Amino acid sequence: MVRWCPLSVEYFKLDTDASLNTRIGCVGIGAVIRDHCGHVLVASSQRIDMSYTVEITEAMAMLQGNVLAVETWVVSIVVESGALSVVNQVVYEVPMSADVGIVVCD
Picture 1 (cartoon, rainbow, N blue to C red):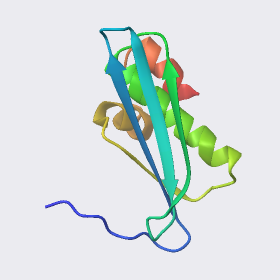
Picture 2 (cartoon, helix red, strand yellow; picture 1 turned 135 degrees about the horizontal axis):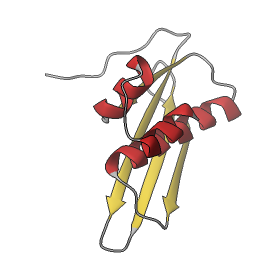
Picture 3 (cartoon, one colour; picture 1 turned 180 degrees about the vertical axis):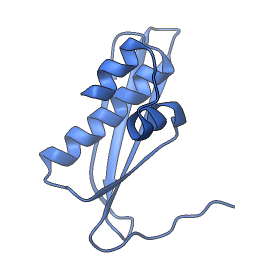
Picture 4 (cartoon, rainbow, N blue to C red; picture 1 turned 30 degrees about the vertical axis):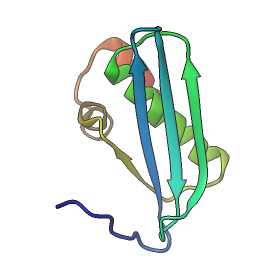
């Protein structure tokens, strides 16, 4: 069973996610930053009128979340994403396609 556990006071939680709509050829990316109690501090979402792979879209969402953290001066973050392949690329530098790699490098 998975359940939410509060973070230490000095940390913030960054959750990112992405969605694809291949029928109309667009993607959506989003990020939310919460404090140690789970209260939303800031959130961001964006619709992009282009179609990308799931991995590229998830990497773009993670990038958007990190930019959001920098822009709001949130520095001590725990990042959460459901895109294990992208997380592995970031954490362990697992090779991926060049397209995903460009976003991850950013």
